Image 1 (cartoon, rainbow, N blue to C red):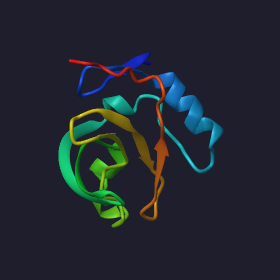
Image 2 (tube, one colour; image 1 turned 120 degrees about the vertical axis):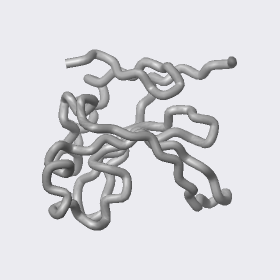
Image 3 (spheres, helix red, strand yellow; image 1 turned 90 degrees about the horizontal axis):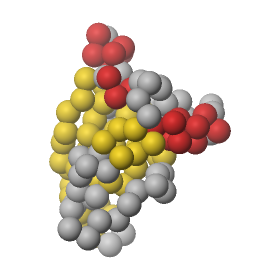
Image 4 (tube, rainbow, N blue to C red; image 1 turned 30 degrees about the vertical axis):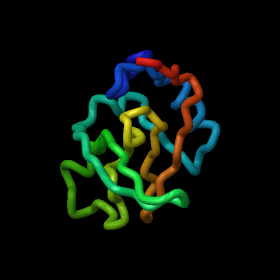
Length: 117
C-alpha cells in the first residue's frame, strides 16, 4: 500500500489517515485501501454554491466492478466511485466516497499545506 498519494498540484496526502477517518465512520463510509490503482480520469465541472457559481476539478476513480459491470452502476453516481475534489485554482479540497443511492461521503483532509507560489 502507498503511504501517500500525490494531488494534482503536487501535495502529498496521507492515504492511511483518510482510510482511518473513513473506517471510524463505518458503515457510512468505506474507502478501499488501494483505490489509487483504479482507472481514473480528470474532469472539470461547474457547481452552484451559496456564494455563486464555481468551477471544480475532479480526479475520478472508477471501482473495477463499475468498469466491468457498468449496467449495475447506480444512476445517481456522477463522480465515479470515489473522487478527489479541487477548487477552481486546483487546490485540493478532499476526497468523497460514493456510498450508493446518489450519496457521497466527504473525507476532509487537514494535512494539506498551503503554498504561496
